[in-house]
Image (cartoon, rainbow, N blue to C red; front, side, top):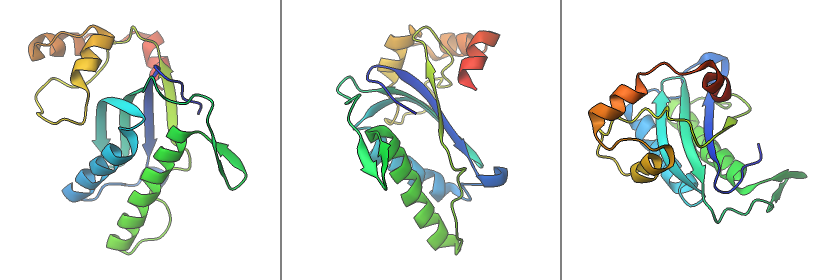
Length: 169
């Protein structure tokens, strides 16, 4: 996927054959640390969701992102964010395989990303968590979201139009 500066994306992947990619609490925490290490220099993380067999990110690519810069990887052109996502998943895979005496990638071959328009408001973050990984203020500003957790929860539970759902999946 080609990523562009200033654009917002829904990025997701799941386990091979829908199998688990996270096996215990420490796996989730390790993956979050990998996200912080590999994504935050290129993106603002607006929201994330880690499930036992898949993950979702809502990210906004930094304004300074080099839209046309590519790295050559085994003869293929790879842009910096694709490379960062690949490195994140590869390093996570190596750690999981070593810890659980596994082989092969727990992830499906391709991580998918869908570009979102700026007027979408489906971010699942009620303000309950005190974490710092998500750029909550930027998410509120971009999507004109209320700061009050209850008001946000009300907006989040509204029916999502079919047009928006098609962009997400």
